Structure formats: C-alpha cells, structure tokens
Image 1 (cartoon, one colour):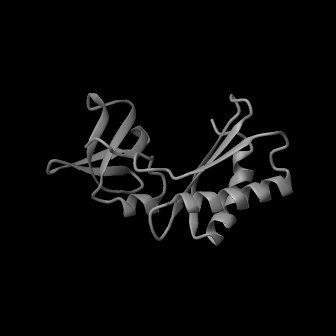
Image 2: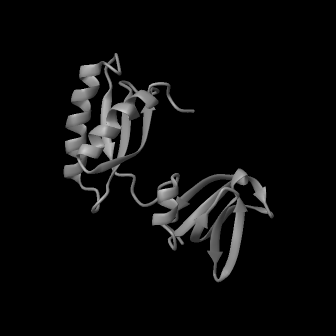
Image 3: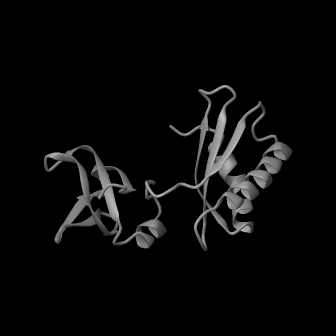
Length: 153
C-alpha cells in the first residue's frame, strides 16, 4: 500500500528530475523506521545513472520538500538508481527492455506455475508476451502480480 504522501512527493520530484535530465521511477516512504526514510528512485535518460545524478537530485528535492513542508516531521531522504532487477511498469519500459530476460510472477498458479522466465517480447491490453527458448508465451495481464528484469536468466 502506498503512503498517502507519495503522490504529493512525486508531484514535487518529477519536474525537478526533468530539469536534471532524470526520470523519477518510483518512491517509497518507510514510516516504520526512526526517523522515517523517503527513498526516491531516479534514472538518467541519457546514460547510466551515477552518484552525481543522485547527489544533484537529493540536494534539489530536499530543498523543495523543506520549502513546501510536504513532510512535516524529521525524515531521511535517499535517492537511488533502480538498478537492473527492477520492476517494469510503464509502456515505455516494456518497449525499452524488449528482448531482455524477465521474471513474471503471477498472483496464483497459472498453468501450474507462479513464476515465468523468458525474453520480453512486449505487452498489450490483454497479455505480456515472452519467449521461452523459442516458444512464444502470452500471460494474461490480470493474472500477473509483477514483471521485473531477471538477474538470473
């Protein structure tokens, strides 16, 4: 479940990231920690995301969050790169990672299994398509809990 402050944080973070040539790919507010931790994942649209990108985003976002008082109490801000074992969410990501190894997890067993590995072929309104050693597969989107890049193909 997403923390109720996340939409406001994304509203603030997105234009800042765009000015820096970055894209916000997600945010999590971990209120179970003392102090709470706000983690924002960013990606450089031109090259690999580096420490310099994270540092620039951290300074700019922290300044704006403090100015707007979006988070009223003390917190820790972490800016990071989503890395390669990340979840695919947007249409753009499904296009960009076509041909990459993916891991699909279903909510309940589909055709007898809950995890599917293969090469991403794409997705449409009905299904996510993958290639398993030359065999085309289509998994219904409503059965899929998560699609992520696979570190262990």
